[in-house]
Length: 205
Image (tube, rainbow, N blue to C red; front, side):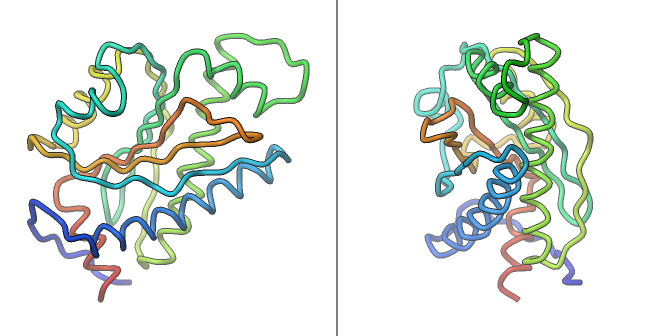
């Protein structure tokens, strides 16, 4: 197993970002395939967006700070640490329930939350299984936790918990398409400081 040696770096070259994008794209493809097989309906993920962005710009370019959303949080532990954050517009919850469960299943808030948690559990673990093969790393996940709050409050708490204090932050974002329609949801990865450097070291050795 490759040792993940941490280095410190404030910015990344276009080549390094392309390497990360390719890894995430492969992992996202595995996740979408696993979900499609489970629900027996096509689910697609976009090519990931990876960019360095000023913290304030996140709310201008991605989602307003005051937008109320549901979020599912899964922590990644092991040879690398970070948090996966799946955010979804409130109106999309019913679509996800319909996607995950048999037809004509009555909607309820508890059912919607369970469906969201199961969806994210499948996506993240399928993704990590692919990444572990590429990195030769041991990674495990926590039980998914669901939160409903303003987008700004959720993002701030996750970044602070991961000791991310820089004005410039890395955004790793995938979007999902179900039966050709874009779901108003995104999967973010918020790493502990130094984890991206560890990933790049492992991938280029």
